[in-house]
View 1 (cartoon, rainbow over the protein chains, first blue to last red):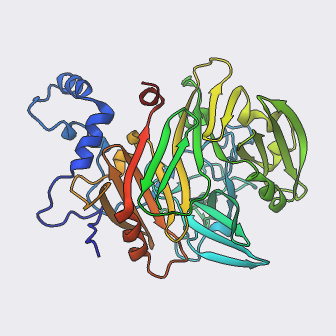
View 2: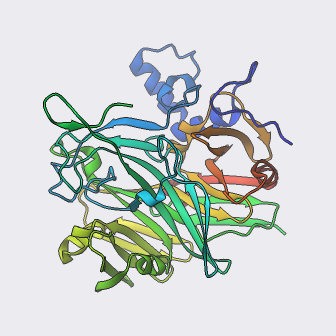
View 3: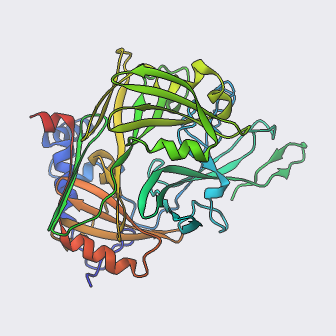
Length: 193
Length: 242
């Protein structure tokens, strides 16, 4: 068995990742580093990798949820894709069927034997939404159906096979409508987690 | 017996890996983004169209499950554009371009699927060049739109789902500390909200491996897979054409 280190907590005495340095260097290039360093007035003696903090993984288990996503519903003329950040397009299949039974609910990760030789596996897509999996739409317009209610969305995908042969596959979204709470002004809102 | 897998992304980039093992792989599929010019008058995210590339025929069983029938068929770029809307009120429809080898698709909100001109909007202004290696998607008219690949994926039987990421995106998944040394590079493990995955990196690419939910001993299957992995790369169109 290979001891595989955590990606979230640095092991004691861990050395620096060689492939990360190599990838950053080949992807962004030495000249790019020099330009960045010069523009920022940063000493050139610093590690080139260190110049790109926004590309570094945070050294702890990152919560996978964006808690306050902008509300595009009024902008998009009614075509706002309920649980989709890509406003005008429904893009992927969205349903609460794709949610697990946890609290809070995320995209399911299980296998369903549907009978007649049909089997579907469900996966979660990590980091699919700006390096997180889940996002919460904070709707500011009350609770008019069908779209105007806060909801949690979690990215995943499915793969269905029939008699052992691939049938279809693709991305899916778990959509979980969040409970509402009446405020003093009478407007229903979803409480922050 | 060994495996060499290769997929051409919609932007002309090439996703590839190789193994000393004989792997049973699904045809690739890929999530792509068509990004329009930002005009400052609408949310940036609203200028992005996200599409799904899959092998030809992927959307036939999907139409069946949506209770959707084709309502429009148009010839385009050596294939056809199909719009299908569901007979069930409120259920999403789908629009896709079908070429000789691949489908390029988007689901549609129910209301959008019922309006012929609106239903074509996700694919409007795009050209498709299909081959067995992949389908290249290009804006037909230059309006400042760009096509990029978000991920290219394949399912490996007995292992799980492997998602290859473009370097700019993949790097953000890498810790600064070293992973376990494996023939292809380094590997890390993480688990979030009871869902585990592995991060694989070589000098030329990054991949996320999500174990199959059917595995009894996922760790052992993953370790066996990574021990046989000898190459992992994602090359941009520019690098490929050099």
